[in-house]
Image 1 (cartoon, rainbow, N blue to C red):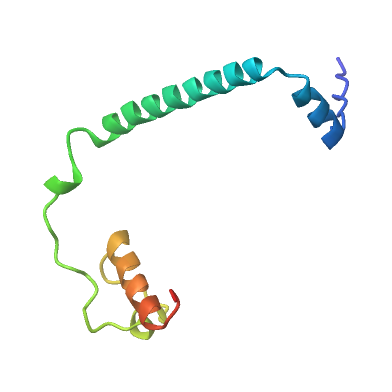
Image 2 (image 1 turned 90 degrees about the vertical axis):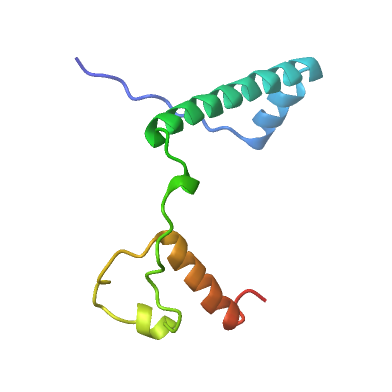
Length: 109
């Protein structure tokens, strides 16, 4: 059985304006309210799922680890090499390092 391709209709700015201008303010407010409810429900579902993923652990309960990046490391010694790092560098630590280097180089001015 052959299927017919869907016909694609070109929508212009005029079509959008005419369809929105015909909508009453009350209908627009009701539509906005319904969309907002969907967003809130989606956020609540996301928070519930996130809680399941994290379990009972929190960031503050993690043991403090020693920094992997040496305080005397430079951008060149750390990032201009093709060798992999000996141990994993936490993202937070790498971001802090890059922010500090970029600030020293005036990239945040």
